[in-house]
Length: 287
Image (cartoon, rainbow, N blue to C red; front, side, top):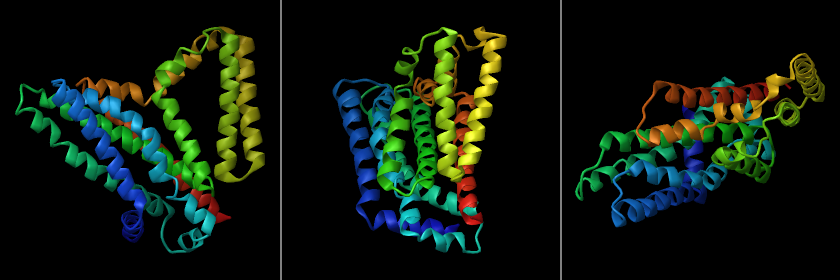
């Protein structure tokens, strides 16, 4: 794992990608800090980070698109797959290289609330809880980006899929308002979701049979539930989006509300997507 980590760190630091990621993120945090906190005198640094979080839509695809997809395309992944190292160590090593770059930026950002104390009273606890929330959100997005990069051989496709996913989570509050509460509309939404799940399974496993069977099983279960009690689907899509939203716990932490369930939620997302990435890599090694 250490060798994988060092290799990826060299790849990032010897190319423009790693520096561009850190420069973009640092610049946007600095700009919002200067405008909102110094120029307008806002004592809430977390609110600036909440505004900056939209930059993840661009920076996460930039950072994660090549992490697995490039090796898949160039077939250099064969060296990893045949090496006497467990697949989870490959996944974790690559993931930690991305997190390291992000950690450097966040450590520098920890100084900003202290600068604010020179100009007035600042709630440092609220500021640092917000920084923690921003950090966990970014780490969760990186795990998702790594998984998406691992199921495709095309860097551009990996970037686009990650972009769409991150953007959808950032706009989740607006998306919820688009869903009708009636059961028929929600049934259609979950049918589309079942198709998406089947598509992801196919990309990760390259097995059309498993993907098709998974879709059929999910669809049959939903049809049975709908026929038995259609009211189950009333407002279900909105509840699902709200419950799985990455932005909701982040918004709570930005407001200074530190709850263990928010931290556990982010860590669970990270573990789940790293597991999916590992599972996808194991499948390719087996093949």
